[in-house]
Image (cartoon, rainbow, N blue to C red; front, side):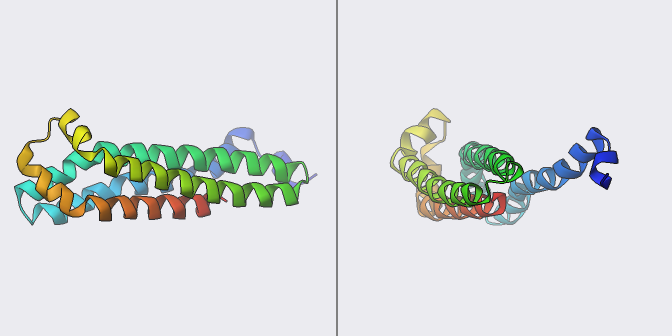
Length: 152
């Protein structure tokens, strides 16, 4: 018998969950550090960043959901000794996930004004958001891509 067979299921779940939990919390808590630095620029930049927060959470939700699903399906394939299938699946998820998030980010860029109006953003914030929206979306896509690589 191996050690894994003697370990309780709760212990195994804890050991496998805490690293992913740490990753998710770090993805979501970086906004606090951003707020501290952006707050030094003034009220309008901080307000602009605050209006992007709900969109950022949607992107993070998509990438985390795809990442966790990917990890589960690949683990199942590896458990069934389908290593080649697991490798192909990992490559497919990275490719399709990165393209999917890129398309979603492009869509968000194209409809940014209606989104901001829906969030009741004042027009004074639009200029500031327009100046960094593209850079922010590219960084969101890059973060999603890194998360997909981490999940594989």
